[in-house]
Image (cartoon, rainbow, N blue to C red; front, side, top):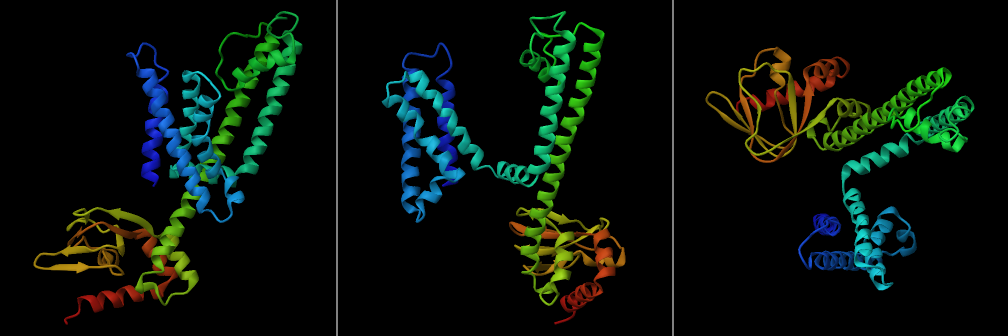
Length: 345
């Protein structure tokens, strides 16, 4: 369904954009209008189907997803029904871009970051508007006598303050007095500092959200591995925090013989083949490899290749040593499992 929505929304956006180009062939604008109408009707049908499936319809109708679905379905047909010109009705196709945003996981991540960091962002935004207001007021006081048209009121000076604090500097309004230019320099520096605060808050929020997502994914995979089944929750949390998820495609070389051993791997999903000098060993979900190079410090003694799509949990050598020092029972489990795996059968 997501692929269908993405395809239909993309077609609609292309038709909406094409309908604004001048000098197209005869009938092109009518074709663009028809395409926009068809897309809107498809989204209208989709909205009705989703509405009928919901048991709590009123609650669903006020959710963000439902509002986006409604904006994608109604405006174009409604504009044509009330007699709006075709070129005006097509412009409402801009709402279809919201469908593309809604189905993008990156925007969902951004929404969570904005929600988590809302208090810090509101504080910096408030400071931004306070600085903006002070800058406009002081510029009005300093420049109104020399430039009454540009700085004749505080609202008029606000445009200068916005372009200065964002360091855009259109140049349509420039302080003429020495005091006004000094003010402009201070406002520019303040703007750089405020935008740096915004960027820092968002960067920290993204880093925390990504770490949280990776931890949850690692935890979900770790608890399924038989090797960790008897460990306590604190040990599992410590392991999940250090493990990194790595996805491999069919035929991908995960480790190569002779290379230094910098990590070991746990197989969460899929199957790999260990290729040594005269042996081929298949390892499946729940097993691991690469541990001997970390324990002994010797180079890799085999090449490991993915036999299909696989999801691995990688433990780097530094984290392995740190974890072995704090969780010695894990190291014993790894050694015992390795001994059982290589013992004669």
